[in-house]
Image (cartoon, rainbow, N blue to C red; front, side, top):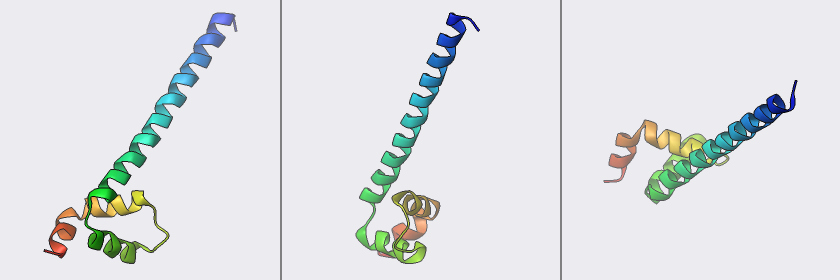
Length: 75
C-alpha cells in the first residue's frame, strides 16, 4: 500500500467514526427531549411498566410507540 492509500483509509475511518458518534449523540438528545416534554405522571407510569432500571431511550421508545394512549391517560 502506498502512502496515499493509507491516508485515504485513515481519513475514511475518521469520518465514519465521527458520523457514528454524532448518530449516538443525536439519539440520546432525541430520547432526552421526548422524556423532558412528557407529563410526569406518564413518565412514572412507563417506569412502572418497564421497570426502574430502564433507560431514557427505552422510556421514549415506549412513549412514542403508544403516544395516543399515554397522551389520553391522564386527561
